[in-house]
Length: 299
Image (cartoon, rainbow, N blue to C red; front, side):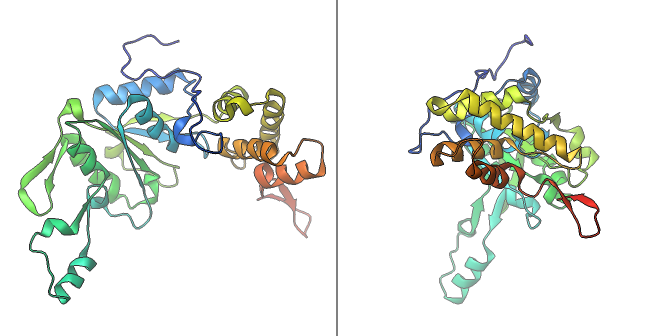
């Protein structure tokens, strides 16, 4: 157990009360903080004001960390999922040029140009900082052009940026009210070194068996069955062993899918139905297949 003055101090078991009609909590309501290193990394990001950049295999919890930190801290939560078409300014604002053009053609152009701007997640987080702090998730930043990470250096470093329709006005937030920015990457593209130097960097480990069981307890609550959860966890690691490092094994989400489907459908291990359920939730196209030329390959 690491001992220090924590601003962020989650409950280690991550168990919450289910709130939706299905009897199962959502991903934003459960996160198992059983890695003291990760909790420390979040606290370092909070105290330094630096973005927290998360690496890790699919299903390791990168995208669900930020909303759960926001839930525990009682802060606002904003998310922007990056795509290849995401522009650098999209995290700050988006200008609706089409609406302005249509209004102009219809002779209904609004003289207040600000009405054609939609505030992005960082703008909203900066603007609301005086009343309630925020957690901003920028998901899969490696999908964007390299200009996007570099474009964040200015706003996140100075905690300010110019208003797009008024260069004399700055949108600012104080250091004590600044949002926690969590950025995830699947490591598909190398990120710029200047950007990395300005981030707190943490790599999430693939979940071990005990972590999977804790996640199952948190998500399933009264529906949790120790024997079934352990059996499915073993199947996850069997699939991972078959891959021999050629690809990621089943994710935590896929593990939970198998458990929930088993309970809701009444499908138990050892039956033909279970073999199909396991194939569609855990195996999928991961197991080695033999081509017509006799050579095995992983899919």
